[in-house]
Amino acid sequence: MIDRPWILNFDSAPFCNGSLHLGHVRNHVLGDIRTRWLRSRGVDVEYRTQFDAFGVPHEAAAEAASLPTHEYVTRQIRRMEAQLGRLNLSFSTHDHLRTCEPDYYRWTQWLFLFLWRIGRIYMAAKPVRYCDACQTFLANTQCVGNACWRCGNQPQLRNSTQFFVRTSDYLERLHDGIDDLAGWSLRARKLLRSFMGRQSATLSQLCGTVDDASYTISAFGPPIDRTHDLVLLLRRDHPLALSLTTSIAPLPPRRRVSNARPKNPPLCVLDVDGTPIPVFVSLGDEFPADTDALLLPPNADRFPDAPKPHFKVHLRSTTPAVRFRLGDWMVSRNREWGTPIPLVDCASCGIEPMVESALPLLLPAHGGGELATCSTCLSEQPRVAGTLDCFFDDAWSFWSASRTWSRGEDSPFEFWRSNPPTEVHFHAGYDSFVYLHLYRFLGHVLFDNGVTHRAEPIDYYHGHDVITAGGRKMSKRHGNTPDFDQLLDEYGPDVVRLAIVGRSNPGKAIEWNTDLLSYARHALATARELAATVTSPSAARQPLRIPRLDRFISEYRIASAVDALYVQSTRLLKSKQPNVDLARALTSYWLMIAPATTVSTSHH
Image (cartoon, rainbow, N blue to C red; front, side, top):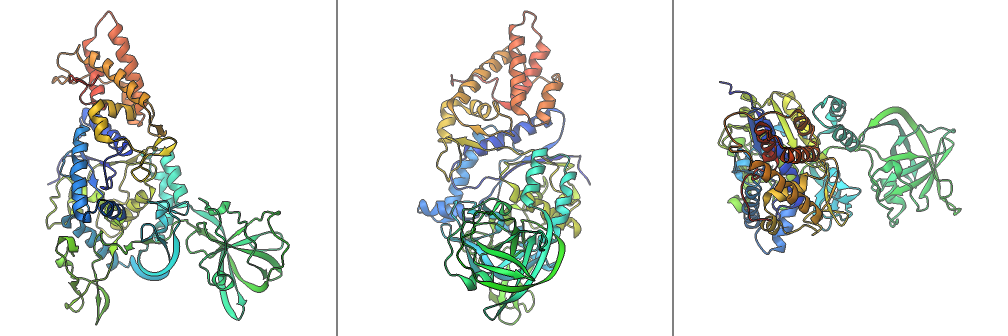
């Protein structure tokens, strides 16, 4: 039996490595306003979030607190639950899912085995970025401007055998589908397109011998001929670079490799069938996936006169090509606090899946051991070392938010398919495109294999910019966040909510200061004065709709809605002809933004 139509409104999950900060507040308050607005229009909304409770940030914070990671995370979740409650968020349930609980990561492991069975997961030995500060390997998408996404340290390449999800086959389809994301804001679509980094150029295959060793180079850029003055920027881990130098000064990190302008001397000159091309080695720039080198226009004044070795190479082929910044997704991690990889290293069969009916494979903190049953020979074998990237746990979070799944033996995907939402609204910042890309990839894979009912998991995403303090993004890592509980104690939740959303629409960054709180207090005083003129703002009679406010909220322009609401409320209070119906309508909109508007408070 199919239930009545419903909408999922989902807030991006916070890490549980400390208090909520104001960036979280912006995200959750925007999600809550959206929910209240939809419900005021008679829409059945399931409003959810979860706790993103695995990963390096939790290990680091637990170590600093001298606590076992599982104990630290449990404490922080309780703290965050209380803070979310104080914000008066209208979640459908306050029993939020935790990615670190066995009844959740059991299905993370099921998803891994599903991808393994359909050939989407493979093992490979290759140079992988390693962050010394976090002591873990990183996927390329977890490096921002060549820095670790969490600590800002510049990672180094290390050869390592890891597990990868084969996402590259879907890149063209996902890129082509961006224009069809009609419910996403224009900026969100532009940023996603930039994040994927699609480039069209020529792929030149070079081959030759240098010091008696044979090399091939896949160079991406303009075609090589005598009419182009080009240089070749070589990956730092390419065998040619490794053989010709042992110490090269790193280049300044760049966000986009197409802007690379290396200042170090050329490593050598390749004579490509009569065309001399200086070769530089990049130690800091990102490359498109499956590319050894980039062909770039040179800076005429940067080449020193010192002699350089010349080597003859041959241009084997030149073909039009498309490359993306994104490659396949590395999902294995060498950390203890994560979902155990559900594979065994079987002495007879090799690397094989464990028996699926025995899931979940538990962490030691949850009573797990070192053995699991091989699905091929059914013998007890050592489980594969390591854990899954915490992004893997989050990547299926939408499907865990079915309103009928009870975290039992039944698959959450089955519940989703039997009674799917008509729409999914997602709330997260503009720094969430790694997640958004993975959500879309999994959506298409699950749909193609009959697991879910549609390919695109997110219908509406507008995004929001950061909150800064002193010009720097506010975050727990930077230590520039105010004490959130103290802020609530001093000002109350409505003032904090309105300070976050009332002066800047989500597309703009907010520089946090006390003026925002002063404005919020003043605006709420007007709202309470108006509410006092309404005998029963929650009366059974449906309040009037105000089209202008509806339009602003539907377009995610909450600050514009607050401004219009304040002006109209002030005008009505000054009017000598009271309009109770309009006052009730305006109060109903104030209650979407500041739910305790009509409650007397001692916060003055």
